[in-house]
Image (cartoon, rainbow, N blue to C red):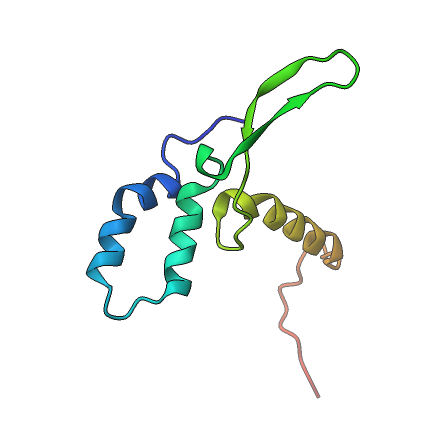
Length: 106
């Protein structure tokens, strides 16, 4: 899976502080927490860990911890995809050919 060239977190990092300062009169702490979490998600700011194979001892590169904020696109992409697949599996089968005559009620 290739990484996109620009992420929401990049936009938040570049313009988030200016947005907060411009809107200081109405913005609340609950609003500020979301862009802060998105900007820090999967960076050294939240710490990280090194995955190691229990069989051979191979160590992977550092994996940074996620913010797990429900508004974060990085954290919620997997959950969203699972939710969509669950809903797809619950859909009723649709007919392969649709009738062109209108439905008539008597």
